[in-house]
Length: 107
Image 1: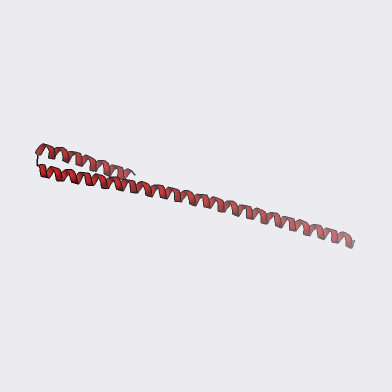
Image 2: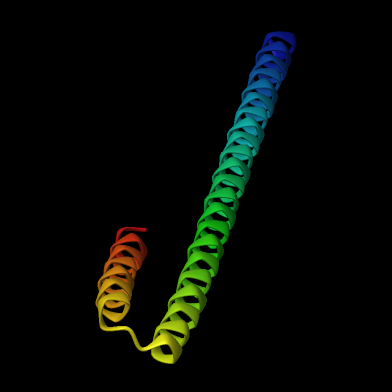
């Protein structure tokens, strides 16, 4: 009788230990998977932020170049003082500014 009780208690202890070990392993696996997913998401967000920052810098550079070109053209027109040239340059400058504003707003 005592041997049977000891065997049953040992079997119960073994089953409980196995179940606890399996649960611990499953929890560790789930935590590792969650950490991997979080790392992948963080890397993706960083890549997107870098791409957006580079795109904004490119747009800013284009805007600066366009503004410099328009200023130079306006200065040349003011020096030349021809009415037809002034009208054409003003129209072109307005079109360039509108296009740049639209591009900046869209981006």
